Length: 156
Image 1 (spheres, rainbow, N blue to C red):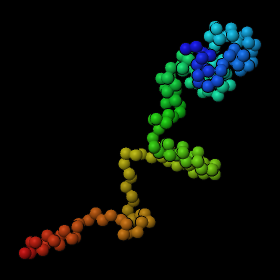
Image 2: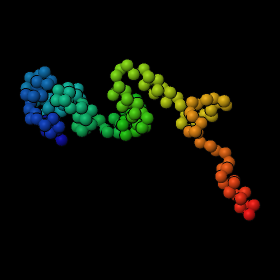
Image 3: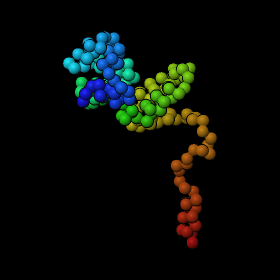
Image 4: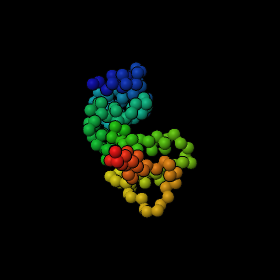
């Protein structure tokens, strides 16, 4: 695709050699020569930033980077929203919505979450009070009503 046309369509404005020259801080003649010879990646990044376009988008869509290369880079050092767990998304959302005063607590939660094994819940030590009222704890013993009903049937 024609580079000027791509920048015009993406930025929703008319892109001329004069606009490119101004963004690259060169003469119109030099800008024209660079466009005709093929803009370097440095020039593409500079123009993109000047037009408030993501430079990575320009490098990918103009054929200098592959989408897979960008995704592999993000998966190795960053995190894609598409591959983030709900917990990671929640922590990031909390980090961005809460005042900076909560940042240390959020970082501590993230560390604990990263260290925590999700495969099993460790058993509670005997005698430890979890603070729940006795009425809210599920009873896992014998069903006394069912036992009484059975005894009555056996007695008859």
